[in-house]
Length: 189
Image (cartoon, rainbow, N blue to C red):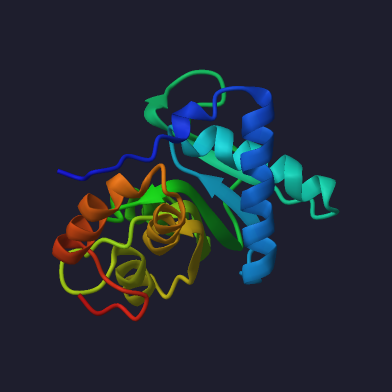
């Protein structure tokens, strides 16, 4: 069992969500990922994509966005996609990547709409092996040609723990977990 859990649901007020949107926007602009619109996967991706779109607009970049709902709606606007129609190069927004399941589902929506995945932005890359020796982020890149970036990753968490005397007691469990399930930046297990 993992010694840590990233819960994006704790960004549950306007100020914390605004700040998270700022971190995402900064990472997106720094990575220079090519995209025409944003897509957030249900459920945590919905407030994230909204916050990111607002923050990018504040910085002068007004992008359309879309998100899916888990259940198909048969009345009102119907369907399972809400927001701008998917088109062009779509930047996938998610909170965390572990196995890459949510990203693969998002790619299905995007390709099914005639658009193309343009990139991936996540808050935390757990840097865990996917189905082989590559991380889930690296597998997604190899499968779909999607470049991705994250605000933080397991390396940055471990580095932070090493610098904090009051939290260093968590370090051993993190390093053991990484040795068993993780990859390094180059993708080696």
